[in-house]
Image (cartoon, rainbow, N blue to C red; front, side, top):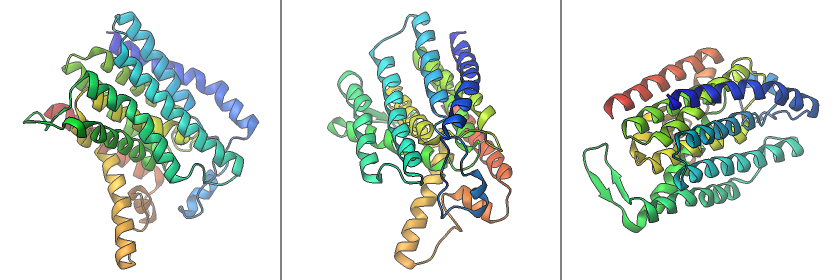
Length: 316
């Protein structure tokens, strides 16, 4: 029951927090600057209030902590996940704030951002290495003990997930909607594994993602910015690492994986042959340039996210 309440509370708190926060952003003119190389149709989005991830991550973290305390299962594991989520949010907010103050779509340098992401990811990675298990389940078929390599593997999972969701956040409602299905799948998997405190956290984040869609659906009143996307992806990765279902994240977040692969393929192809595989990457922009409307792309990706999340839970 507390798992459902956690999701509902996350949903309600995000909806309630959005009204005053949106008003604050409009008054302070904290708007998004659109990258020049993006689709021309996105120019109209310039100036849309950003850093909306604040009203997504904080309500989710608060809801999770409150319900876990009620569940009487508050421990270091829970605090590590919440702390990591808040640190990723802080990193993303810093990036967004620099973009706002510089009045351009360039914040923290990619190298510096990656270093901070790795440092934050080390917290849960080292915790699991010293107080958990260095073994990785191969979809329940076999286990491999990575030993000293496990922290590096865990950091790769967490940072990769953080950047994958960040790349996906390019259309109204796209990252929030696909993240909702991913966190929902995590909640089910954690529940089946008997890790109720992690199920409560996953449910809270799923609820907050759903609540944020009210402000972020097309046409978006507010963007989550890196404040939200970096934290959402990082939290998904941490849940997978702490919950010991690391590789299942490949199926749960398959949409994020596909988005990331499209960027990698595009870069490799262009640098090696001078030709582009896609009209633009990440791949959601490719479909836009193929003539799909933004809502059509988003709804299609939502459907894919739902199907992959359902498949992961069913297989698990």
